[in-house]
Structure formats: structure tokens, C-alpha cells
Amino acid sequence: MRQIRLVSRPTGFPTAANFELVTSPPLDLSPGTALVENLWLSVDPYMRQAMDSDEWWALGAPGEGRALGRVVQSLTPAYGIGDIVFHTQGWRTHAVVTPSASRLIEVEPGVPLSAHLGILGGTGLSAYAGLKRVLKLQPGETLFVSAAAGGVGTAAARIARLLGAGRIIGSTGSAEKAKWLVSEVGFDAALNYRDGSLVEQLAAEAPDGIDAYLDNVGGEHLAAAIDVLKPRGRIAWCGAVSTYNGDGVVAPRNLYDVVGKELRLEGFLVRNHLDLRPELIEFLTPHLQSGAVVSDETVVDGFSQTVEAFLAMLRGENTGKMLVQLAA
Ligand code: NAP
Image 1: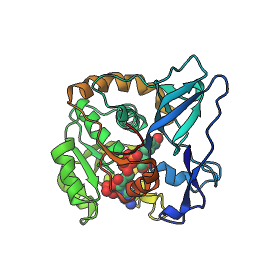
Image 2 (image 1 turned 90 degrees about the horizontal axis):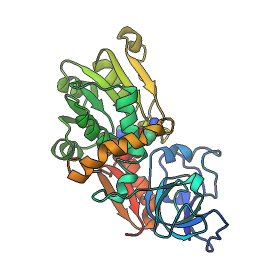
Image 3 (image 1 turned 120 degrees about the vertical axis):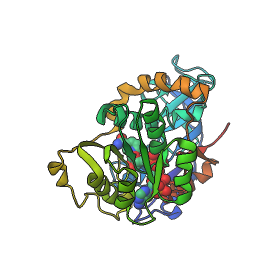
Image 4 (image 1 turned 135 degrees about the vertical axis):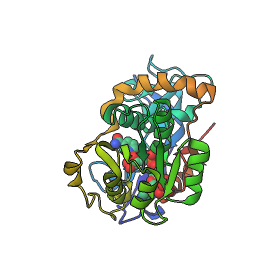
């Protein structure tokens, strides 16, 4: 078994030196548990926040993180050999799981397994909860999504289209990714936030204003959305990735315009919307099977590349959900 441990707390942008890859003796099973060989690992922005916290990610330990693995030994009637299991034991090649702290994945034909860490997993569920439950997106409405080329952002666009959204506008960090969002993902327009004034670009793409904003970035993105939202517009605040490395300002300069424009700004945590997961899977599975929807992802091969995949995601080198594949 190999695992990746945090050995020092990053200051600013993390580096490979903040981590170590450790080989450990084989894991022992006790009654009621199963041994899982991991196939897919997730690398996520919240892990950067976790690295700042003793409670969230202790030094010398692997962190919490979503993974999919195959059962290779079982001492529980809940899991048979070969079952695919979701768990949250993070960056390691193997894990001992209990049925209460893991979940059996129903593998549907025509649906890639990795989608259960992408559009069908916590990533897609964040987009779905944000659009359906927080924004209560209505057919025909104009939607703005930031970090649009990432996991949550691409899932949001694909789901919003199925929900009947009108114009969908995204923002991302390069012209190439902006082009991809329109040609491949189904955005009607995409802005490069590194290319001039964000608020001017957004206003030009939404001359009548936006109805709803799914915020993954915070700071200047949130400020631009507040400027361009229609009166009584809604914001679902999902994340603030522009601030996780300790730079950037979370609160927007124009926060008080929320009052003047009677906007609704609501933060949410996906872990409090897990009840929506069966609905999301039932809703999306036929679209994934028909090919009408894809789970956008960037796949990095090999466990030893996990830290680099994480850093590349923070640098914006992913399109769709950033995943590490350990085995077929
Ligand atoms: P992701 O979008 O796939 O990856 C992160 C992306 O953030 C990068 O690809 C990069 O793309 C962008 N980025 C990095 N630094 C940035 C900066 N300074 N300004 C603007 N964009 C920057 O990650 P994800 O997993 O889908 O998560 C997206 C957001 O959702 C994060 O804020 C995350 O914390 C949040 N989230 C929240 C919940 C919840 O429960 N509330 C659950 C899941 C995710 P560019 O090339 O476009 O810069």
C-alpha cells in the first residue's frame, strides 16, 4: 500500500515538497470490513483549504478525499469481491472500508465509472444542488457560471441546459478554454477573466443582465456578477477558489449592492444536499447513456502523479473534473 501524506503546511501556492509518498505494510482486515484497491482518486480545491487546518488535515497523515475502488478481500456480507465502492479515505492505493463509511456503486452500462467522481459524484451534485435547490433556475433564465471549465462549472452548464436555461455564460482563465466551453460544453458565451475587465466582458455578453449566478471563484468574479445581475437576481455561492492560496479577497467590493438590488446570496455545502443524489443519478443516467451528456474530465495516470494532478488543477490545467486513474 502506498499513501501520500502532508508533511508541511503550504504557504501560498503548495509545492511537491509539502507531501511525501510512503509505502506501508499490507493492511489487516477485521470482521465487518473489506479491502479496496483504488481505481480512481479525486483532487479537489477544498483540499487546499484542508491543508491549512490541523483538524481537517493532520501533518503526517493522508487527507480526506473521494475515491473509487474495487473490493479485493471482504469480511463483510455487504460487499463481494469485485464490487465497486466509493469512500473518502483520500490519496492512497488501498483502503480498509466499512459499509457504514463507504457506498456501493451501481455500475450502469454506458456510464463511465469515473463519472461517479465527476458529474454523478459530489462535483455534479454541487452543480445540481446549486442550480435546482439554491438558485431554483427557471427555463429561459440567463445564468453565469465561474470556474466554468472545471468540474462543477462544466457539470453546471450541462445540467442547466437540461433544465431549460436560456443563455449560459461562463468564465475561465484562458482563451483556449473559453473556446472549448462554447464549442464542446454548450456554453453560449465564455469569457477569459485574464483578458481585460471581467465586469465589462460580462455586461457585454448579458446586455439585459443575468438572472442567476453560480459562484465558484469569489472576489472580483462575485463583484462583477453583483454589478450585472438583474434586480432580485440570485447567487448560489459554491466556492471561492481565487482565495484558497491565501491571496485574493473573498468579499466583493460592492457587497452592499445586494441590498440596493434586492439580490439573494446563499452559500451552500454539497454535503447537506446528499438527499438529491438519487434524483441526480436518475436524471442524468439516460443522458449519459445516450451520449447527450458527457462527464467532462481530465485524467492523470498513476498514483505517483496525484500531487502533480492536484497542483495542475489549482493552476487551471484541467478541463472538467481532474481525476487520477490508478488502474483500469
Ligand atoms: P475545478 O473548477 O475543476 O478546478 C479549479 C479551477 O479553478 C481551475 O481549473 C481554474 O480554472 C480555477 N482557478 C484557479 N485559480 C483561480 C483564480 N485565482 N481565479 C479564478 N479561477 C481560478 O474545481 P471544482 O472541484 O469543480 O471546484 C470548483 C469550485 O467549487 C471550488 O471553489 C470549490 O471549492 C467549490 N466546491 C464547493 C462545494 C460545496 O460544497 N460548496 C463542493 C464542490 C466544489 P481557470 O483556468 O478557469 O482559472
